[in-house]
Length: 299
Ligand code: ADP
Image (cartoon, rainbow, N blue to C red; front, top):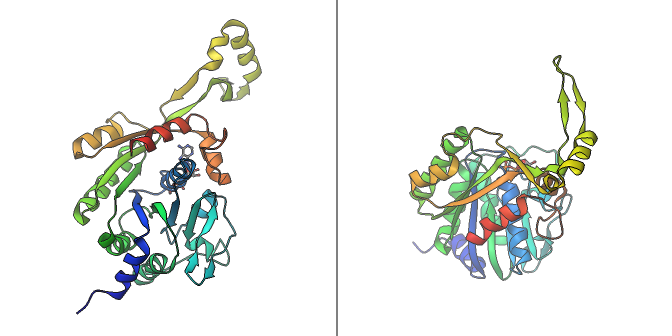
């Protein structure tokens, strides 16, 4: 029996892709797609050619996070063309759904089929990086992507988590999945790690005994400006989730995988993601931009 012809085609397609990175998370809603999108924007801002493949078949958020909602995939004689933003070629099932509210209720083999098609039929061209945004957990999609890409080499996986133990427990499962299938863990990112924003972005509320809140922002800012203007340059952070057990950094030490760093909860990052914008062009993101940069520079 000769080699699987599909894998041969995939290997040909992937021959022009230098690095392949999987972005994983144990749970949904921890910021995996946000990280994949901003990682792609950051690499593109460094003049790399980037492909971003969204294999979250049931909940594709990449088109929105790249500002590409409503775009369609086109066919050329070379294959399916990704949808481009800057130098990032993006592929997602989200581009194929007639109505974005449509539910995709597919069993494993069909998901397997579309992932194979993304790898076989998409003409990525020369890429420095292919970033693959996977769904949360370790399910059919993960097994498929590993099965299809393993022969051509995957550089490794980045795992995104939040600081709480419920999220970290699932990260351990992701790490063990990577170990089982022989994929290197490039590192773990702790997202939503405290709320940080400039003092001037806060709304200051005074709470009375009966629970009513009064907005005293103008008053508070005036006092600061008068009595301690240096306070206006401060960034205020507070813990949101319980990280008393040591958070992702401790888990990484326990499991012997690299810890890449923390990204705070940042309303500006959330806004950038909602609007499909990059944190690496202009002033879109606040405190999270340096945190993201530091993490990406470690890779
Ligand atoms: P996942 O891919 O893990 O399901 P998403 O990337 O879709 O999670 O993020 C869930 C929501 O949280 C999105 O609205 C996103 O903009 C927001 N979000 C993610 N990370 C941050 C952050 N560090 N600060 C503020 N909002 C964030």
